[in-house]
Image (cartoon, rainbow over all chains, first blue to last red; front, side, top):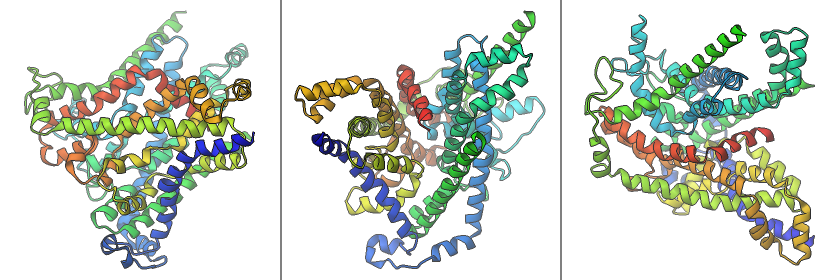
Length: 292
Length: 274
C-alpha cells in the first residue's frame, strides 16, 4: 500500500499542477491585482504597479456604470434564471408524462439548443429580433402587436437577451428534472390516487417536494451561469442601448482589454466572485432549511 | 377514457408546438444561409429561399478563409479533448480508488473550487501567459481546458464503482499502480471517458471569451471569434452571416447527435453528485 500513495500523487500531479498553476494561482493573483493600479504602463513593465489598497473598489462604487452593470446582471439572473427553470419544469413534466410517445425525440429536440455555439445562435436571434424584417415582429404584427425595436430599445433589450438565454439553456435543466421525476417511486402516485388526490394535488404534495433537490441543483447551476453573462450582449448589443445590457463580465472585459485597466477589472471580477458565492450559499441553505 | 384520450392529444399538440418553436431559429438559420443575397431582409419575411444558392458558403471558404478557422477550432478542440481525458481520468481514478494521506483534503478542495467562476482567473491568467510568451498562441488557448475539476469529479464518481478485488488481484500478480491504471482501469472506464471527451470537445469548440482574450492574430482565431469579428464588416449580409453560423454549429450538432447517449450521461451524472 506504500507504493499506492506515491502512485496516487504521480497520477494526480498533472491535473493538480495544471489546476494549481493556471486556475488557483490566478484566483489569488486576481485578489492581489484588485488592490493595485495595474494598467497599460504596468502591462509594458510590471515594475510600474503600485499598491493602492481599496481605491479600485472605492472608484467602482462611485461609478454609475458599475451599478448599472450590477443591476443588469441581477435582472438577467433573477428574471432569466427562474424563467429558464420554469420552462424546463413544464417541458420535463410534459415529456415525462405517461401517455407521451416518442419521448426521446422530444427530449432531443428540446435539448438541441443547449449544444449549439452561443456566438452563432446569438447572431441568428439578432436577425429574428430585427424590428423591420425579423420573424418575431412579423408574428406579433399578425396578432396586432408591436412593432418592437427589441435590441434598440433600452426597455426591451434585456428581455430580448433573456429570451435567447431561456431558449438556449432550458433543455439542460429539463434533462436533470426528467431524471429527478423518474426517480420518484410510482407507488406514491398510485397511493395518492387511491386517496382521491387530483392531478394538481399529486403535483403539489408528491412531485414538488420530491423534486426539490433537483430543482435546487438546477437553480444553483443556472444562477451561477447567468451571473457570468457575456457573449450574448457582446454579440447582440455591445452592452447597449444606453448601457441597458452591459453585464459585470462585459464591463470587466472592456475595462481590462479595451482600456487595459487590469487592476480595476480585477476588482470587478472579485465583486462577481462574491456575488456568485453568496447566491450559491443562499440556494444551498434554502435546500437544507426545507429538508431539515 | 375519452377524457384521457383528449388530454393525451392536447399534450402531444403542445409538445409538437413547443418543438416547432424550439427548432425555428435553427431551421431559419439554415434556410436563410441558402437564400440569394438580400432575400433574408425582405418584408414579409421569407421562410424558404426562392432559389437555393451555395454562394455564401463559397464566399466564406474562398474570400473569407473560414476553412482556416475551422481547422484552428478542430485542432484546439481535439487536442484539448485528448489531453484532458488522460489528465482528468488519472486524477479521478486516483481519488476514487487509491488510499493515500490527503485524499479527502484534495477532494474537498476540488469540490470547493467548483464555485469559482472562470472569469475571475482570466485577467491574471492573461498576464501569466504573457510572461510565458503564450499570448496569441494555440497553447495559450488550450491551457485552461487541459484539466477540469468537473472532469476529475465525473471520473471519480464513475470509478468508485470499480471492484477493489479486481485491482487487488492485479497487485498480487505484481502489476505496478501505473500499469494497473493504464491496462486495467482505462479500458473499463471508457464509457465515462466518452462522456468526458464529448463534453470537453463541445465546450472547447463553443468557447468564446477566453480565445477572444488570448488571440490577437486573426489567422489563429477559432470559429466563434472569427464569426463575431466577421459581423463587424458584414452585419448587413444576413445570408452570409447565417452561412457562417451554420458552419460553426453543424460540427457540434453532428457530434452531439451521434454521441448523444454519452453526452446526456454527463448531464445527469453532474446532478447526482450535487
